[in-house]
Every structure is written in structure tokens, then in C-alpha cells.
Image (cartoon, rainbow, N blue to C red):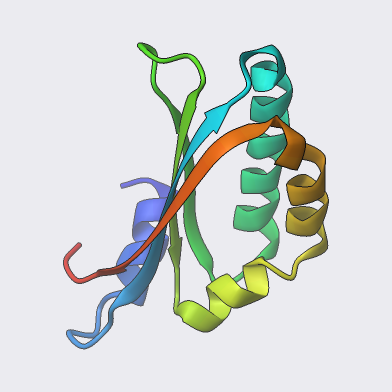
Length: 114
């Protein structure tokens, strides 16, 4: 079991526990894709390392569509996600990449089984 999976499993030991899940789909301007990925990976790393409420932050790319990026984030609760959006590293990331993003779709879910 990976460290992330064990961290999530500990948080969901209670049958009533429902974790806060966020997925984000990005379409990035092709000429800024490598810059975006570099910034995104740093943001994800800092989120996992510095935010106790961030239980997972996975960055995925679609090999068939080079401008597509998918995020899967798990937080202890909605408050932890709201805190994430106030963190210095997130605000810096968001400011740097905003001009490179052509499209962004955010979905919020509850994780009910792990």
C-alpha cells in the first residue's frame, strides 16, 4: 500500500467518513504545456507536503491529447479544500498558469468507498 493510500485509508476508517474529492480537467495552450506541467507538479508536491488536509493530489495527462491534464485531489473535508485555495503556493501557481489555460472544468465529489 502506498503512503497516500494508507493516509486516505486511515482517514476513512469511520463508516460515516466521506472525504472531499475534487477533479479538474484542463486544456492547456500547446506552446505552454511543458511550463504548465512543471508548475502543476510543484503545486501538487507542495500541497501534499504542506497541507495536512490534502490526502492525495494526482496529476495525470492524456497521451492521446497532449494538451489535456486531469487532477484528482482528495481532502479531509470541504474546509481543507478551501484552505488549499488560500495557500501561497496555490495562489502563486494559479497566477502563473492562468494565461496558459484554455479551458478548466472543476467537479466536486464525496468519496464514499475506499
